[in-house]
Structures are given as structure tokens and as C-alpha cells.
Image 1 (cartoon, rainbow, N blue to C red):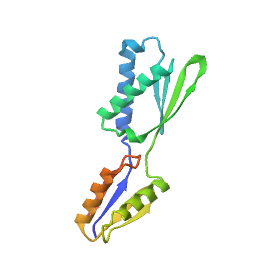
Image 2 (tube, rainbow, N blue to C red):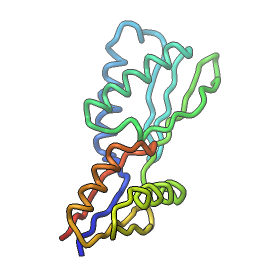
Image 3 (cartoon, one colour):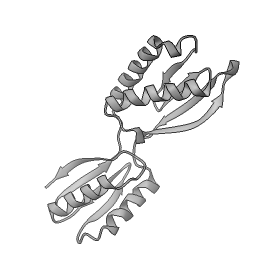
Image 4 (cartoon, rainbow, N blue to C red):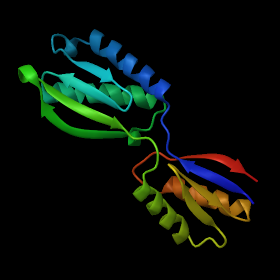
Length: 162
């Protein structure tokens, strides 16, 4: 029976490369001179620091530009509120969203059921969703519909088997 998995993953190597490129650009750009702007990357988040909210917005644009160039979906970024930091500076945490949460999985599951494709089934397996059907064409139609839908997270389709 043909199946495929719906997953939401981030290539952390590409994120690391994008952050490094953004750091280099910020170090060289004239409009970031003496602003003490920087990007800090940890396992699950990126922290943006700068002197003002305007510089923080510019820093965010540089980061997004580098991520898009590296083919990392911007849907994987969850921006938190801008907060005031020490010395009159501003800071913003950006969480990296990977995996499909339980409520997103049920939303995607309802979407697949609502397509009205006969004989298609889906079930949650951890942080992914397994979709099965008797016909390969039905699975391809489901993938196309999921690509067109907006669920707020980046979706990838893996493990397609006949």
C-alpha cells in the first residue's frame, strides 16, 4: 500500500551558515558600525541584539535574506516580542520551529480528511504524519493540496513508497 510521511524539519547546517553570513555582512556594513549589533545562535533559537528597534529590524532583514538564499523556510522562524536589554539596547529571540506539534498534526489530519479523496488515511506518528492510500494518484493529489495549504509551518514530504 503506497504511503508517504509529512514532516517539518530544518537543516541546521544551513541555518548555521546563514547566521555566519549575516554576521559577516553586519560586521562590514556601514549602517551597522558602532551599533553593537550581533546574532547569537543556539540549538533551538537565534538571539538578535542591537542598539534600537530600527537596527533590530534591519538585522532581521539581513538574517531573513541569508536564510532565503540558503533555502531555509521563513515559516520555521517564530519571532518573539522585542524586549529592552541592558544599556538601552534591544533584543529579540527567534525560536526555530521543527517537528509537527500535536495540534498542527490534527489540523493537517482534518485537512486531509476534508479533501474528500476516497480511501486515503492519515495517522500521527510522533512529530510526523503518515498518509496511506491504495492509489498512488490519490497520494500525489494529497501532496499537491498540502503544498497549496498554509499551516504556518514548513512541510516536507518524505519516505514515499509504493
